[in-house]
Length: 281
Image (cartoon, rainbow, N blue to C red; front, side, top):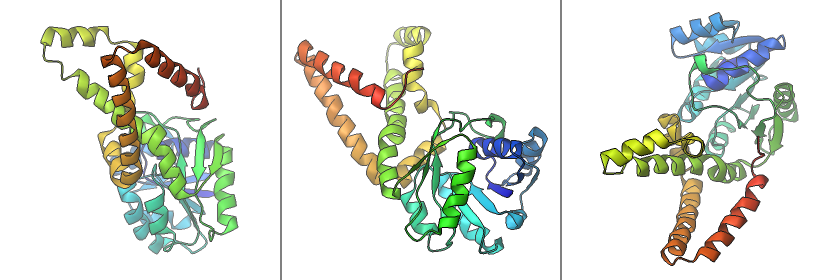
C-alpha cells in the first residue's frame, strides 16, 4: 500500500520503519525540511516533504503530530484526499479528537498505540516499537467497516495487541495509567528539588538509583506532551488527581498516627494489585 505519515517524530518515524520493512511505500510529511531529509536518509520513509499534498496518493494516512495539532492538520489534509482514503491518528486523548474529526471525514478511525519513550524526534524512532504493545482503536458506530478492517490489518502487522473501546472509556483509562503517572512523577521530582539544604540535595542526587529512576522517568519526559495530556483530557485527569490526593492523604495520616499495621495492609494491597497492570520484566 501507499501509506502516509503526517508528523515524523518518535511514533511517526517508528511506524515508517516497520511499514517500509513490510514492503509498503511510505510517504512522510513534516513541518521542517531538515526532518524530512533526516527521515529519508535514515530509511524511515521513501519520500518526504513539507507539502501536505504529497499524501494525496496515500491509501491510508497516520496523523502523528502532537495532540493539539491533530484536528487542525486533518482539516487541512482532507482538502487533498480522495473520499476513500482512510485516516487514523495516534493521539493519547481520543474523545475530543474523534468528536471533531468524525463529522469531517467518514473514513476516520481513532487510534492510540501505547508505546514510546521519553525521547522525541525522528532520531529517536526505532524499529519494532509496537511489538506486543497495546494499540487502542476507537471507531464510531457509523465508521465504515472497511476502514476499521484496514487500520486493524496494519496495526496487527506491527505486532501490536489491539483493543477496542469508546473514546470516553479510553480517556478515563489512560488518565489512570498514563496521564496521572506523568503528573505524579513530575511532582516527585519537584518535591525532591525543593530540599533547602544544598548538601542534602547533592547527596540525594548522588544516591538516586533504580527506584528513583523508575518512579521519575515519565516526569522527566516531553513537557509539551504533558501539558497537552492535561489540556485535552482535563476532566478525567482531574478526577484521577483528586483520587490520588485522597490516597496520599490516607498514607500521610497513617504515618502521622504511627499506625504501622494499617500501613502494611495498604502496602500489601498495592503489592498484590500491581501485577494486574504490568508484568515484571
